[in-house]
Structures are given as C-alpha cells and as structure tokens.
Amino acid sequence: NVDHYAPNRDVISKPLVSYVVAPSDWTDNGLGLSGTVLLGGEWVLRYDTAVVAGLDEDVTALGTRAARQPFGADNNNNKALVGRLGWKYGGAFELGMSGYDGAYDDDGQLPLSGWAVDALAVVGPLRLTGEFDHFAAGQAVGPDARLEGWYVRAALDVFTRLLRSGRHGELFPEARVSLVGQVERVDLAGPLEGTWEENSEERLTLGLNYRPASSWVLKLDREWRRAPDRALVFGDEEAWLGSIGFVF
Image (cartoon, rainbow, N blue to C red; front, side, top):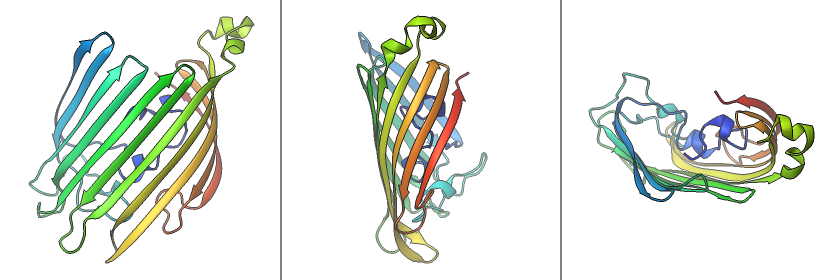
C-alpha cells in the first residue's frame, strides 16, 4: 500500500505478493468511505473502508489474480467488507493494517478472509519498506486454501552532496541516486484442476535508481527468481530490467 504507484516504487517489478495474493491493480464495484484524523503535530490516522462485490471463486493454488471481477459483475449476493487503517508521521513513518472478509463462491457460502500489514520508515538517507499479506479461502471439503507472501526492501541514497553541487546541482537541486535491495516470497496452497497443490516463488532484486527530480526516475534492476514448482509470476529466471518513469 505504501508504494503501490510504480514511479514512486524503488524497484521496477511489482512485488510478487501484490500480484498473486493481493492482485493489484485491483478495481472493484462498491461504495467506500475514507478520511484522515489529525492526531497532533505531524501524526495522522488515515482510514479507508468499502463494501464491494469482492473476488469470485477462482481462488486457486496459482493465487487470486484470476478471481478479480469486471465492472458491473458480482458472482453472488454476498458483499465483501474491506478496509485499511494507516498511522503516519509526516513522510518519515507509516504503519498500515488491512482486512478483507466476504463469501467468494457462486453460492455465497464459502468464506474468504484476509489481512495485511505494511510499513515504511525513513531514517536519514535510508528508506525501509515491507509488507505481509495473508488470505484463507474456505473449501466445501478439506482444509482452507492458504495464500500468503511478503517483501522487504531497503533503498540507500548515495553521492547526494556530489549530485547537488556544481552545474548538476544547479539544474537538479533535488537529485538523488539510490542503491536498492529487495527480498520477497509467496507461498500458496489450494485447489487446482481437481487436485491440491502447494506452490511458492521467491525473488532477489538489486537495483540502482537515478532521480534527477521528484517527477522523473531512471531505474536499472538485476533480478534472480526461483520457483521450485509451478511458475506463479516468472518462475526460474534471471533478468536485467531498465525503466524510465515520469510522475504527472
């Protein structure tokens, strides 16, 4: 939640957990309420809650991505309650807790419940970001399907004084270069094609970012991916990635 927007994120690829567990980009039909409560100083409390159609019954050992419903669709008469509560201090700290609860099968009988924790901390030139998501999907027979995943990321700004000196500093007074490292993993257990499967995928990312201004970013990442069973996102691969992003 804290860095979902791609140009603001310090890595190029969307975290695995944000692809197969909480299947963003995830839009839904419903009615929501959000607001901010001032707690004094720079402390604020942010709340977001909604009643939505929710995910459908295509929750499997490959994740929840195929369970997203299009606009105007609802596979049952049940509605899902979703929400997030975020505790924030300026731009230096944020802690969020999210929840989801509703029936997901076509008959509206089987429960799907989930929770997540996300955090952001900025300590001088160091930014730490992380998230953990968990879903449990009830089954007509047998144990609940379990889908969970996490990531932890660190980004360290370097050469700041050099970048902001001389002619470069005059042209780009907010420029920064960041060294980035991220580790992540997803573990899924559930039905698939008439059987029960357990799948997992993990990834290590090392990267370099150059932001000449707050609205522009150039990224270069090296990824190592491993999936001992089925590929959930990429499978067993190594890759170089490059991107240019503009915030508008």
